[in-house]
Image (cartoon, rainbow, N blue to C red):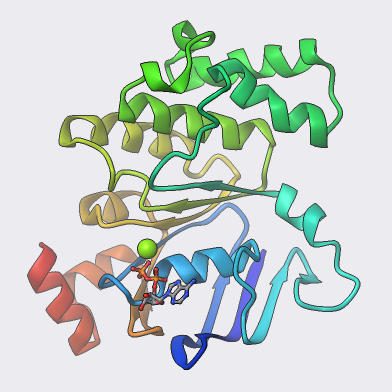
Length: 240
Ligand code: ADP
Ligand code: MG
């Protein structure tokens, strides 16, 4: 479903991604891990073209993103993104946060959008917060709303960039539970995370990035029990 071929990205002279190649199948959950500054966020942002690769090829559902004439906006609508800092609209209620984009982009009625929003809020356990403003929610609740909001667009692909890194420890679990409940339901998930236990439990494969390169791709059992690259071994020694 997502094919990344020899993608490189430079910011001025700084080479941040170097010759990244990676394939992600439909419905798969892939965890991207690696040291801070290794290019994880940049790689994720290249998938929905929040960053434009300097070279290389990205194909989603057979459509080449960087080719002239590709309707980038349309492809983006099919890709949800959940950020470390939630990025909810502060001046909108939870309901409005969730109904806004589907109404504008999918042109569904307010009634339909609200019905769908409430069903999704139930799914993340927050139906009682429907009329609250984000400032009234805890970090964990905000992130669960952000996930529900992403789902409201019915994306085929969901990107997570360290979705629990900004949370107090007691809220990490509730967010991971929600992410886990979405895994292997058909949606393709690319998850940048420092939660190694979670990656091991939920991901189908682990992609270890080091200094802008894919140092290793392996199933979690293999990666965590016997990483092949020295860099991955060093990284795991530090974080586990
Ligand atoms: P990670 O998410 O693994 O911590 P990032 O992808 O955020 O890594 O960053 C990789 C490198 O690219 C870092 O050195 C960072 O400073 C640099 N970088 C990221 N975004 C930009 C940008 N917009 N302009 C310049 N440098 C950037
Ligand atoms: Mg990052």
